[in-house]
Structures are given as structure tokens and as C-alpha cells.
Length: 201
Ligand SMILES: [Mg+2]
Image 1 (cartoon, rainbow, N blue to C red):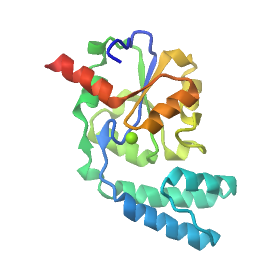
Image 2: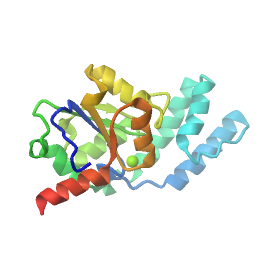
Image 3: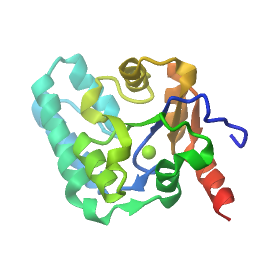
């Protein structure tokens, strides 16, 4: 990672939670709510340990309205404490000062996150970088979620660029796996944070 060169990158993509900000969400309460709702509707159990897996079952059933309804529940819980969102200063500094890191002036930033769009937008506004993000792919924008490659491919198609002109940063193994599945370089955000820290020492 230390020798990563940004000069050839046209689009730099970030996850949101744990990468640009730390959201304060009661995930336990959210999942309990989703489990209950799922059981009521389908008379069967889905444990929502990973929300995406249960949402994919709803996609398989072709229940778009119910899916929207579940997005609404997720939105409610994600936005509940949005004002308490903690900022990850190093990532935000990188985005605001990209030229210091060899990022081309015309390079773009995008977000690929499992959070809903409203959460992403509000978090970016809080971080004061909303105007620096060209494209947001949130929970509602795909029907196969990370680590499926769909989100990254959507971003590639939007910008009409080559995979080697993209790079993805996230905080989880799942993010690295997403990159791998899409054939796009992915790194842990800690690597970038260390790069920023080193520069600012
Ligand atoms: Mg994350």
C-alpha cells in the first residue's frame, strides 16, 4: 500500500461507515425489528445476522414493495443518531487535499456503501465533503450487495473507465472481497489513514 500510486486512478471509491465516518446505530434493535417484520410477512425466519442475506431473499421473491419497506426501517434506525456521527479525520483530509497525495486534479470520488442514501448524504454533509463526491451507490441502488461486485461495476459503467483506473477503500474484509470479486484493487482504510498520518507528522 505504501507504494500505491494514485496518478493513474480516475475514480477513488470509499465505503462510508468505518471508513469516512463512524455511524452511531443501534444495529441490534434494527436487526430485531427486521427479524420480526420478516417473520410477520413470510411466516418464516431469517436471522438478519447479515442484513444483506435476508434482503437478497426478498429480492428473490420479487417483492420490491416489501424491499422498499425494509429500506425504510433501515433508514429510520440509521438516521436516528446521525447527529452523533463521528468523523474519521484522516480520510476526510485525504478527500479534501487529494493533490497532496498525487491524485490527479480531474480524478473523481464515489461512495459504495451498504447504508441507505439519506444516511450517506447526511454523513457527507456533516463531514463537509458532500460537494466532493460525484456518485453515491447506497443500499437502495443495487439488488446484490457487497461482497457481490454489482456496486463497483455500476460505478465503473457510470464513469466508463477501466478497472485499473479505480481503487476501493473500506474497513472490512468484506470490502476487500468486493474488490476481488469485481477485479478492482481494494485496500483497507487503515492503510490510507497511515499514509495521511505519515505525511502530516
Ligand atoms: Mg464499513
